[in-house]
Image 1: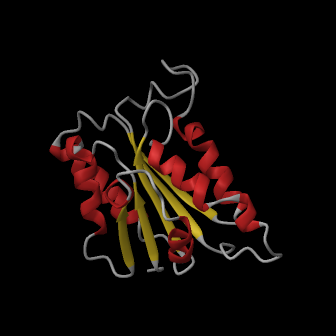
Image 2: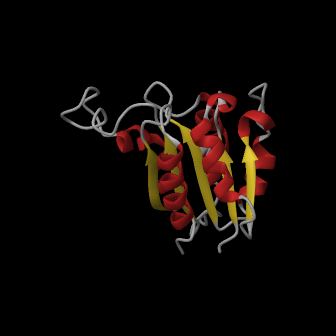
Image 3: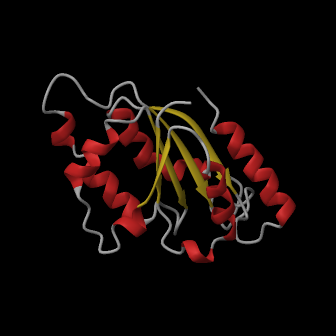
Length: 174
């Protein structure tokens, strides 16, 4: 498995049975480092240069978060704004992040039907990640897969088991 950095951002993690279960998928995985951004930066003061230095050591980045009010959690958005700063990527001809890949793992309380052109919100959930996808693309980081768990607030054990199995398979992507 590629050397992987999981960037987890959930401001209400203690209330998310779905994400508690999903995080178990990372346990005992070789070459995986897990970082909880809300634990690392409760004051929202991101150590930008430390984060930049950290991510260059990894081949894959996993962005794992809940959709909050139709977007990224605020701390993850701030992390992207500060770490993927345009000045950093334009300092030289070579972008140090080129050739890495990424996965987006997200949970949302609403149903998949609500996140469709015909649904309640008139938008596909993946469209809510446009800013993150553009940031990855600008940095020449290939987005390998997006995995969204719908109805995250109401999943039963069997449904959580299925989601965990699906995520475990996704994590094996080369």
